[in-house]
Length: 515
Ligand code: NAD
Image (cartoon, rainbow, N blue to C red; front, top):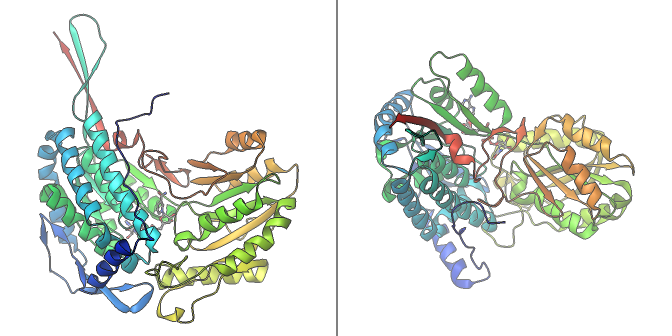
């Protein structure tokens, strides 16, 4: 069948074995030493109204990557009022013109790839391959939503009707979107939300995560330089208080949120208590993601895919593998391979190409992982652990670990980091495994490793999961090919980077004329 959607190409990779490419990255990393800055950007002007706080490198807290000035409630109010005033003109501009601006931003971002990669490495502790994926995904979101806006938000669609009547369906913006994003994809998700909202014709006030304000500020400047009117896109850095100030402001017509399930629920409650028009919440939240492995699976492939899915990005992907349900016979063969492979993982400076796993984002995150690791040590059987670098105390490192458990009693909600749980299961008990997955009520990603078609079909038929991956890793959804997002506790949809995403950021109006 024909491929869905307008033609478009995803951003290309880089040859990381090329000395020229690495030299360019080294230069960009050295340039980060000139501290970056993030501040409220309202109407294109960067506010200086509060004391700046340092933003530290999670791999080495002695290194100041930049500084951030948090937004005040007055900044939020000013940004929203300006966005509200700017909305009609931005919406009226039409999908075609907005698409051209977003594509120009994509080209600039791609051209400035080394700088943004360097920032992802220093501000978010991303390894070099992760930093590259981060920038590519942001570029892809810009081009993907631009193409969607051009195809669907430019011209009204004519609908059938009787002779003497014309019917048209018009897609346009909702108004002012508040975009609230997490630190774990500080560029890709930040830009993805903003690009979707802008493409559909909305004005945007964006709040990045407090851990990663620098990349967000750099992205907003780039979008303005590419032609997004400063009144149509504002940045309000800050933590939960600024998120709440946005959430409860009646000037906000809709919210795009990506982050934890608990925060999404909190935002939902705050909005529900408000008077005025009903504002939709698009929430992409956490997961308790499982991989189901039967005895027909290839052990070496399972080990490689478990390592990648559970420990890449220090396990700080919402899609990451948390629980591997492995059939007992297969587990006997897989366990020593997994333990051996984990011992080989190299933990350390993310700016080195030899590093597999970088730091976790901050001390609060490391403490949560240490507490969970302590409970696991007490209750379960440790299967494997990677080694910490000798100087790991300069940053927030947490060595990947894997534990065998009998059930999910110790894992009732998402634990965000490089901890893998393994639960062996007996032949003939696949349905009980599926019950266990369903009982978590999350529905983000699921991996299946099997060479038996009937088993794969049985799992797919039961699983209410947004993204299912068969005989491969379960991370790294590709824009336009693997629309990403979950069900149940994992989110409301719309999926990011899919053919139905943009419509969720817009409104539909129908015009019927008696001709
Ligand atoms: P978080 O919920 O702590 O924060 C997310 C954003 O919400 C941040 O900008 C934060 O400042 C803001 N926030 C926090 N409290 C708020 C409040 N009371 N009101 C308004 N805003 C508030 O999440 P995090 O730690 O930044 O990110 C990690 C989480 O994100 C994980 O749960 C992960 O699974 C999830 N995530 C989901 C997806 C997805 O697509 N489903 C993608 C990436 C991350």
